[in-house]
Image 1 (cartoon, helix red, strand yellow):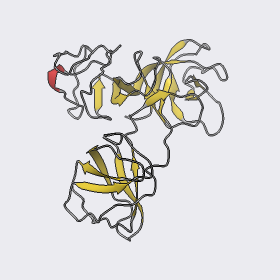
Image 2 (image 1 turned 90 degrees about the horizontal axis):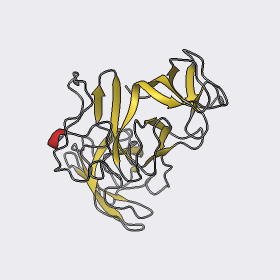
Image 3 (image 1 turned 180 degrees about the vertical axis):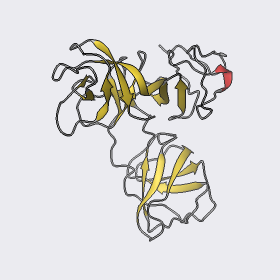
Image 4 (image 1 turned 90 degrees about the vertical axis):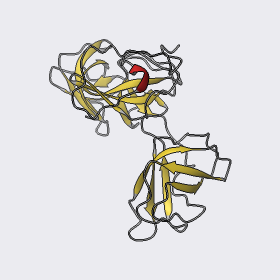
Length: 258
């Protein structure tokens, strides 16, 4: 169960160090500690929080997450890839009406992104962050409200891709190919919001296929554990600080997102 169940609890963060950079998230009601989970959203997904020499991103779990294991975003279907607008979007608007091939719950793509994948020269590559949207039925269209106004018109002949936040529906990585996002500092229940560590000193669980040596490179192993080498395609997450012991937690330095 989440530590925080109401955004009006007046919870006070207790990390013990002052954030000094000035670009991290500030949250009403005192904020959410990195040691707590919440059943209600208290910050934008992907918001950055600095605690001393550690960096965290605000995330939403899609399954039970164990501390020390490598986390990734759950795989997506093709409902949002290379699709089109229902109507042209002129410069200055802050909403796009996008057609999806299958249904999507309200705000499924909130704090994610939409970008022009192909089409008119000068339109390709433009990208905007999604603030909110309503529920969308099968083969239906929905209005996606953006944080920023459209800078270059997007036409119905352009192809767009809509992507959820990389910090939404986070799960423990079960293979070695998923898009790695960080390591949870606490146990998290499915559907709860939490601070996911992405940079700095971090406790990780050691895999058995390639036990890290002191100062060795850490890569994604099996079952969410970190190893020194588990295949050429494995994602690098940082480096070890001490000699590791299989299936134990050890100190490493994450280098996923500063």
